[in-house]
Image 1 (cartoon, one colour):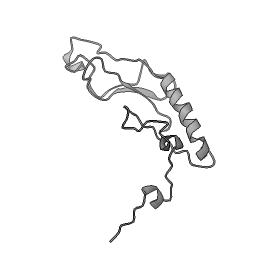
Image 2 (cartoon, one colour; image 1 turned 90 degrees about the vertical axis):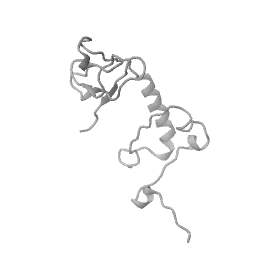
Image 3 (cartoon, helix red, strand yellow; image 1 turned 45 degrees about the vertical axis):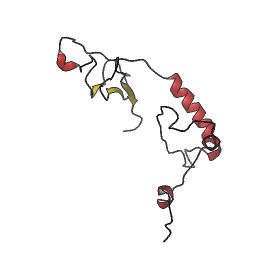
Image 4 (cartoon, one colour; image 1 turned 135 degrees about the horizontal axis):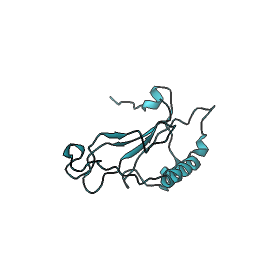
Length: 131
């Protein structure tokens, strides 16, 4: 008995979208390079992006993300207090900084999500757009 396959998008009334650049190998597969994937729903006609604009938006957004990299590092306030750091001297995994170095009026924070393997841990800077 042959089974018919359905994508989740078609089952819930959505649609799958593929960038033409990906099909023509103008951009690498996610398995080719270390990759982070950002997602956004841009298919609504009133505040969305047309299919023909996906490549243009992707190029603009990726460039903006690369230009906005930061070099923030967090260090224990007291190196004599062993509870404030891990074995490598980095701040503890799970440390959140949401005062002092954050934006004065916007909702942003830094999170050191895991222990550093080598060198100084680099926390992730989160900017909450909608809560």
